[in-house]
Image 1 (tube, helix red, strand yellow):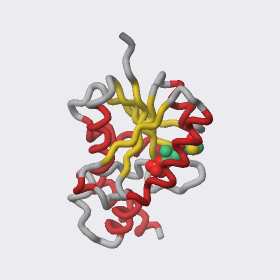
Image 2: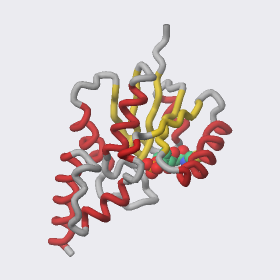
Image 3: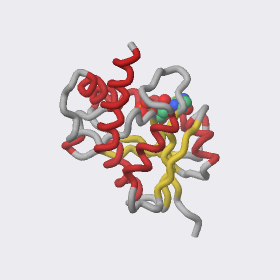
Length: 166
Ligand code: PNS
């Protein structure tokens, strides 16, 4: 039987416990999950795509069925190139739903062979987002319960570097 592969696309700037939760849930459903870190030319991320990949790698340890890579362009094209049957997206709160629903329908129109699968994060991760933890971390708040230590260290380092060069 052929492998059931899913892609998990996102910005991951940086990876949080919410992302890792969704990743573990998807690995329990699919044979292989390919995390796709978007090289987003429209945004100015805190970390380069390669740094974001490294941070995710550092959290994976014993998860041989999960791969991480960067991608450009359309998510549906990334999914097709990975031979994926599904795009995984995490849902936290109801307000996520509207934009996710639009994206899922657009992606289906672009490629009807790839389904979007929404997975709900655990209750403890409901309010975690990369943008919020970056803001809190930059202002000196403790985000150690929201993101893995590698992400927290990397953010602290990057904000200190940015302050030194400002
Ligand atoms: O982590 P994010 O920022 O919520 O992820 C958004 C992402 C990367 C899934 C979305 O922006 C995306 O799919 N971008 C790739 C370009 C694309 O396919 N656009 C059309 C989506 S309907």
